[in-house]
Image 1: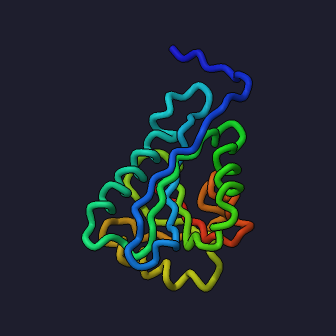
Image 2: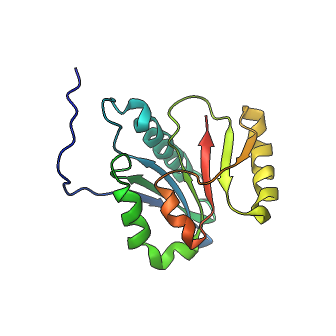
Image 3: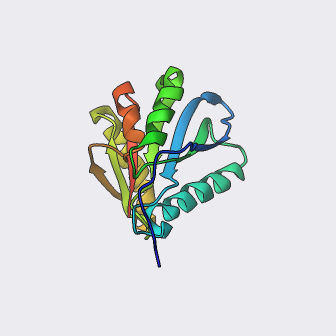
Amino acid sequence: ELTCETRPDAPSANVVGEVVGRERPDEIVLLGAHLDSWDLGTGAIDDGAGCGIVIEAARQIATLSPHPRRTIRVVLFANEENGLAGGKAYAKDHAAELDRHVAALEVDMGQGPPLGLSWNAGPPAEAMLKAITGLMGALGAGQLKPGKSGGADISRMLPSGVPSLGLLQ
């Protein structure tokens, strides 16, 4: 039995972790999901699944030898469902380094096998993204669809020119 209700705002925080890049540590690839769930939902799908996906991706990336060239930053955003406070705070708190974000990917489409990527990165990025999804095709995840943004939380970085991606499921 769920007894959800809207309450006054309270302090919260994003959860941030990194796998530091070996060659270009100042360049950041952000993997994000959000911690809260929608009203009357248990949060397992929206967005517990997304949190699990990005945490597991980072765990596997951290075991690679050598580490990736760029820093992989995982952000679990607070308060996506009720005002985007986590996404707004991240964009504000990291404004000085948003030009070093080479991409931001948000996972917020629930569970299920990956089908590909949605993207908002401008026409010059299309060839590179086609090459990436071409490699993902063997996993059944070769779709590439242009979109408005990769997700609600990372949308706050779009005005700074950060390319955004979303996981299609």
